[in-house]
Amino acid sequence: MTVQEYDQVNDAALDLKSGRVDAVFADENQLYFAYAKDNPDYKLAGEGKFIPEYFGGGQGFVLRKGDEKWAKQMRTALDLIVKNGKYDEISKKYFGRNILNN
Image (cartoon, rainbow, N blue to C red; front, side, top):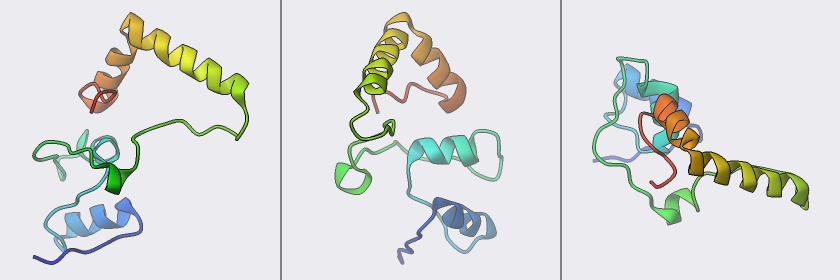
């Protein structure tokens, strides 16, 4: 087996579609939403893996350094939609499953 590294997942997906590679290992949420969800040329296979040394600490929001006002509001909003079930509804709509607890 030969492993090919890519700078962008888009390039890997194009090589997969053209047959230059047999599989792509990348961020599951990005692969599902950008490629597999509505495109019969792609499908996800196997179980998702969360490997911090390759993928870091997970998904997140990017805010300006020191912007505590927005950070607090984001945490409050996320906590609220998780508690009231809206997060699960949105996650299932766009990713086919709850992505919060990968």
